[in-house]
Length: 210
Image (cartoon, rainbow, N blue to C red; front, top):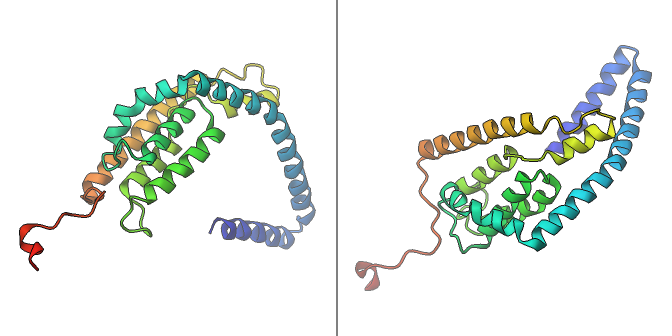
């Protein structure tokens, strides 16, 4: 679906530019955007490698594990239909820890694995469960202590103070996370969906005899 949306936007832009005699400007903008994209990617490599290395050190030193333990009671309340001994719970904790540290690229694989594990608890494979919706909301609006990617972009474009967005980013993400949690709780109560059955119901005395 996303590919079709992008294709529609490109076709519309080309047709609109041709109808207004601005095809050359669109062509120049396309090549200029491609060049800028490559330049930004190359500039981000060193910063992202540095922070991913720190993330690896934090993981090996047990910092991520300690963060996971800190978040465990919170995650248990946010995901009441996910058992704590299920693999999805661990991936959710890792995803949230990476997001808090501003390492979105490192958090993405954990988020994908968490979704895959949550799917194993899904009684209707073609319908997202409440836990999946909660994970998507929190992953999108996560509290971020260090906006690594944005700092790297600002450094790449020569910002005089690339880290002066830390406080504002923290405040903004706190608000967004709070809004996401409130919306999630409201929709859960409104839908009134029962918790996911983690094991088949046991037959009672009436059904045992047929």
